[in-house]
Each structure stands twice: as structure tokens, then as C-alpha cells.
Amino acid sequence: MEKVTYLNNIGCVRLFNGTVEVIVTVDVGPRIIRYGFPGGENILGELPEVSIETELGAWKPWGGHRLWTAPEANPRSYVPDNSPVEYRCDNEQTIHLIQRVEQATGIRKEMTVLLDAEGSGLTVEHKLTNRNLWPIEVAPWAITIMNGGGTAILPQEPYRSWEEYLLPARPLVLWHYTDLSDPRWTIGPKFIRLRTDERLKQPQKIGIMNKQGWAGYHRRGLLFLKHAAYEEGARYPDYGCNTEIYTSGSTIEVETLSPLRRLEPDESAAHVERWALLWEVEIGSLETEIEQAIGGFVEQIR
Image (tube, rainbow, N blue to C red; front, top):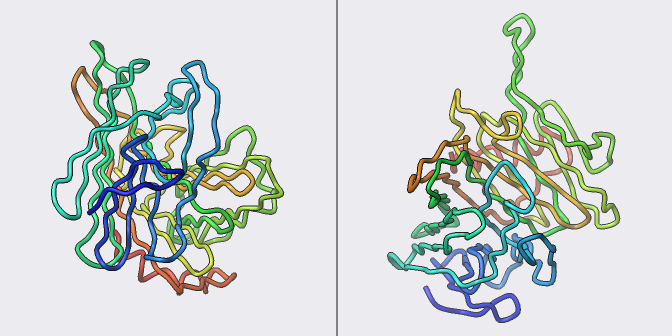
């Protein structure tokens, strides 16, 4: 673990276990801004110049992985986080990042990043704490901006015949701007895929109730996987979504959500993801090829 600068000289901390390196921001955020093999490409996107004006000031996505609150609302979800965060290094592989309480919302955001002793495994714990004097209803929302030029992958529910099971499998949620005829979508019986195309700026987004718990992103032989446990019977945001994917131009996001929680003053809600990064993985174009290429890796992060 060492203090470094990254992304236009922003102060960061680097975790390294001999296999992968993880860089988290401490001058802004918190963000996980890099996840990759030493000397290799960053699987996470980097957006240091992008800025969105809100009622609360300029919000910068920076890139990488962040913690938001769901359901989405502007300006509540877009509270600027361009100031330093407190951080504590619990050991050689663990860093705990604590954002100052947001004055506009009364919410404190925390992120704990734990790198496995070996391999590419990473555990990311997200925590929201209500510092208001009144209850709020909120869900931790873990958003990962990926390095553009690849394809996001979501699992379909396992096939069951009509004779075996009559009830629906899960919701597929669309936004007003979603267009399933857009060529960036590929929807098959085993997977839902969404690829980037820098020429196509019109946003596309879907959400699903994902009982399998995992989502992936493939780019130039790198395979990124994340897993967040599904809670049966829980009430999730966005008509029951716990996984969402979004793209616009070369930007693409892979997102997981926690169930909605009613938080009394000083109560917290946590949401945990497990990550893995694999290299030299070719997924092909057929669903059978994708299933064969990533199936064993998915089992490792459950």
C-alpha cells in the first residue's frame, strides 16, 4: 500500500498484491479509479474532464467506481464529491474511505476496499448512514464506469419449460429513452448484452431483477465480473431492479443496487460486491461460447 497521484495528479492510495493493483482516490470521491494488472489497461473508465452542473454545484463523475443513493434524483444523487475524504488503512490490503456528511442530504457515504492476498479478487463494501434528525428511505447504489469499447453482460434466468413452470421469471425494466431495437443490444435466451459505440450518443439503459447476482464486462480479452447477493422478498428500487446497465457513446456503466431501507437517524445500510478480473478471456459471439468462457469464473465470485 502506498500513496500515489493519478488522474491529473489527484491524491490516491494504491493497493497491490503481486497480481492486480487497485487505486482509490482520497483527494476526491471516494472512488476506485483503477483496477488492472500492472502495466496493463485499466478496466475502469477515466473521465477527469467531464462535469455536470447541478443546483448544488459541479458534479464530476471522475470515472471508476462510486457509491450513490437510489432512487436516482437530481440534484440529490448528484451532490458534488470533489473534496478530500478521510481514510484509514486497516492492514496491507484494506482501506476504509469515509466521505464527509453531505450537507444537502444529511447522508454519509463510506467505502471499504479489501484486496485478496493473492489473485484478482476484491471485496467492496458500501455504506450509507443517515445523519439527519428524521428517517429516510434509501438504497446503496454501486456504479462502475467501465473503460469504453467493450460489452456488458447480464445473465438471463435459467430456462424452464412451460410444462414445468407457468409463472414469470423476473422483471425487465425499461426507461423512457430505452430502445430495444438499438443495435447496441443483443438479447438472447441466456444473456443480455449491451456494447458501446462512440458514434451513438443516445443513452440506453435497462434494469433487471437479477437472482443470479452477477454482471460482467468484456473488453479486449479482459473480463470483469462483479457479484452482489440477491435478497429474496426484499423491495428493490426502480420496479424491483438490483442490477442495471447503461451506455451513451463510449461511456458504459455496470451497476448493482441494495434493497430499499428505512434508516432512522444514525442507522446505516450496507451493500457488498465481490469483483474479479481475468485476462486472455475470449467470449466469442455465440451464447454457447460466452457460457463456456465465463461460467467457471462466475462460480468463483458467488
